[in-house]
Length: 130
Image 1 (tube, helix red, strand yellow):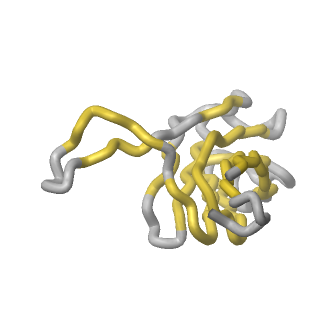
Image 2 (cartoon, rainbow, N blue to C red):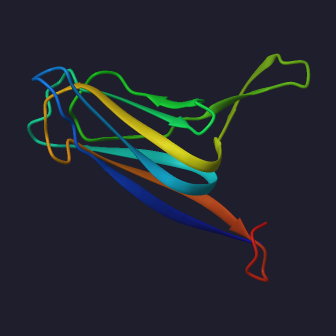
Image 3 (tube, rainbow, N blue to C red):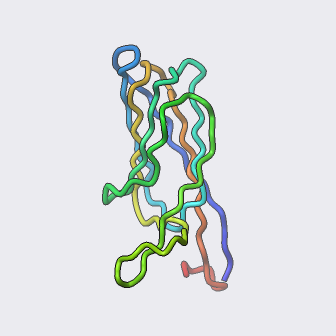
């Protein structure tokens, strides 16, 4: 088997009043394991800007604190035992579908945020998904 790193991005344009503008976008068909998320904010985005990223089942992958600094996050999911008890170990989030990126509490800006998702995908040696 071979592992490959892929990336996809979405540009979020926000509309509304200063400090209360919102916007959202989707990233289609991501299948693999989440490596990291890079948030690239517009130079005029206020420090109150908030971003949340969820999967197609509304499971939260990232709920970043308010800010406007370009930053890379590598969120991990805590592993639980077969009895539902947290183990203290963390693994990459499995991804299988569409991600939604939502920006709130910002200003009205074209490309207020460019969110880039990097993910790991494994292939068998015959080129098929593992």
